Structures are given as C-alpha cells and as structure tokens.
Image 1 (cartoon, rainbow, N blue to C red):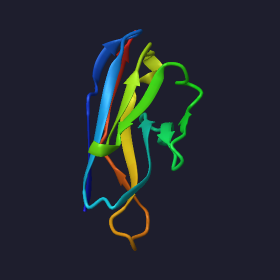
Image 2: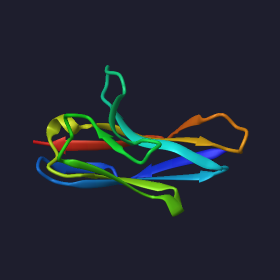
Image 3: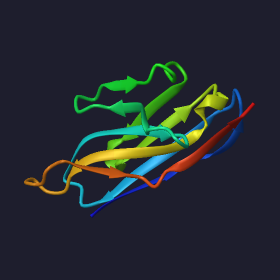
Length: 121
C-alpha cells in the first residue's frame, strides 16, 4: 500500500503565497514521476506541474513564473510553492505519485486527498 498525504492549503489574498507539501509513504520500490493537479467544481482536473521521469519539470502556462515544484527524494516528499496568487488559482489541489511497489509491479497512480486553496480578491 502507498499513502499520499497533502498539507498546506488555506485562504490567502490575491498576490499572496502558499506552500503545499505532499508526502508519499508505504511500499515504494521506485518512483516514476510526480506532480500537482487542481480541480474546480464542474471542471475536469487539470495539470499544474510535474516532475518527469528524467527529472525535468513541466508547468501549465497559467502558472509559469509563479509556481515552483520541488522535491526531497530522500523523504519522498514534494512541494508546490505558489507565489503571486490570483483568484483564478482557487481550486482543490491534488498531488500524484506514480510508483512501483516492487521490482515486478506495474506503475501505479497514487493520489492525495486534496487540499483547498482559496484566493480572495
């Protein structure tokens, strides 16, 4: 079993900053990739940023220059630093780890429970 837990959401005024954390634990033999997604009511979950297998980062155009993903591989933890927040960034933010539990296991997607980020104008 793999468990993914997020923390750090909350409410902030426009222009402010928040930092989200995401910790993965349990049977993790190897990590393929990880990333952050967000979802608003009535809309599909959208990609915010990811670390790819090669270690490169991808960002949605809407957050480039404002959000930064980072990670601590030793702790299987990643972070999302969000600066210059806008009301349109309001959403439930989810993190996802893609991991294999054993040498022979297929890759599996493991999601956090989601954390609310609210940006007021």
